[in-house]
Length: 180
Image (cartoon, rainbow, N blue to C red; front, side):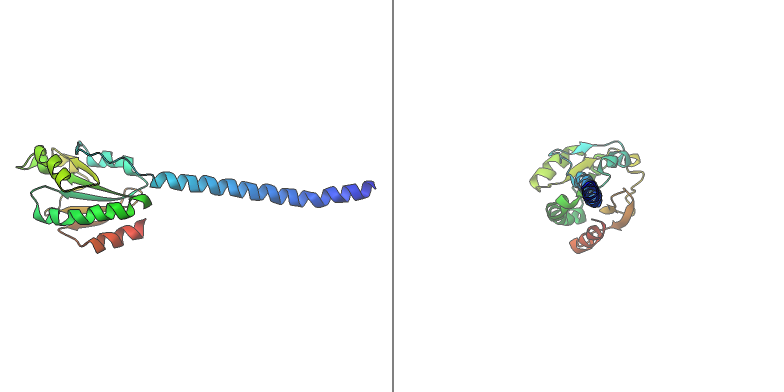
């Protein structure tokens, strides 16, 4: 009788060990999925433009996101052409981890900072707008030979692409799909 009880306990031991392993794997999977959700959690978008002193430092809050960083101005015709596409991209891909940030250079040009907020409202811009009051704020992201200058940043904050001038929405969409 004692041998049957001992044999029964021995046969239950592997099942118990397997159950523990399965539970541990499930817990690790849940923890991993939770951490993935945090990186796609959307950051709040201010309804008002925000003055930033250093674009590179301000971007630290966006680590874990794919970022379209667009350097533009309210008076720039080509910049205005891209805005409706950025609004669409923000709507379509934000939940997957895309953040679009428009960096207005109006404060360092003839139009000034006062032009930005009304422009944002009248155009229904649904993404973050920063303003810079010096070229030094853009040190890591120079405007190149004109605006719009657009940088595509991967989830680690590295520049994946840089474009000067108007680009079709399909180009941006292709870039971000590869990074999301």
